[in-house]
Image 1 (tube, rainbow, N blue to C red):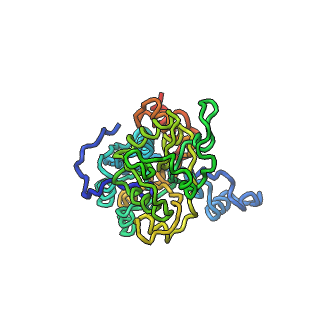
Image 2 (tube, rainbow, N blue to C red):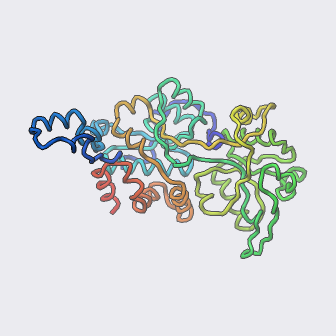
Image 3 (cartoon, rainbow, N blue to C red):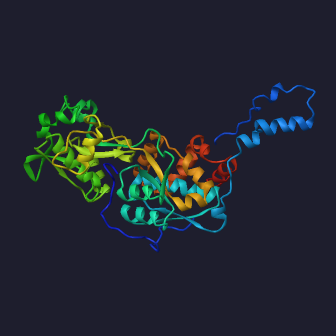
Length: 384
């Protein structure tokens, strides 16, 4: 993620790993087929039936979405990867709730690092990875190429993003808090040398600090590659051990009104809760970005691409469960709704499954489009 959100490079299958918990429209085309309204009154019932059959009756032209899954009716469990970041955890729980309460499925979430669970999905030990950053995982790229995994749908309208951020008061100030602008001309990564004194590394005062990607994620290498490509030789990257540590450092600086330069990505609760400014990157250049991701000595300037978030399905499961595949294909969140719910998770210390229930209660106009009316009715009944 986020330059490739890859956990520590542990590999292996995760069959048998302890789950965290047990199982808990296309719209109908009702228009009269083209040509039928022009049938003359003298047509017999038989002729009319033949005409409808030839043209395509509403029932055959746009059949209702199926409401039952033979995969689930057989008693099989849909195994999800327990994703290690908050948006992935939240999306997973929304999907699980709909599958359990709407389609009558048994589900469970299986823990493990990204590499382990992606490998497990390719091997058939998991069925679903709910928030896949397309193209960023080598394990999944190979599984898709080999036909073992299939990416479907677009989980987030507009896609996901990443980059370097500063609190808005660093650039604009905050009169209510008595904070004057510290770097009024800071707009681009290329403006950073002019303001390097603001971001001094306390442990190495001769350098300035980018509070960077979580240690072990692929974006760690990407950030080093960008520092090299942008010739920001006076900056170093500090890599926290977890997202919680990164969030705590950024939130602490924000509350104290202090300057901080940090790497982050969206959708996330942090970006939904506070006001930040993303620094402008050079235009995305695939050839350069490929070098940046490897921190190559030949790295050339490139911003990160907007990444499509997909649902990663085991291909064999997808073929066995076309009804559920259709649901995954239709699932799509909006950025304001998603970041708003993620912010609530943090502010109210809500667990992902509780946040999923709140989302389903609050935004039926969004999620009921993903499922047939009968399924939606069952899900809504479960929320009372």
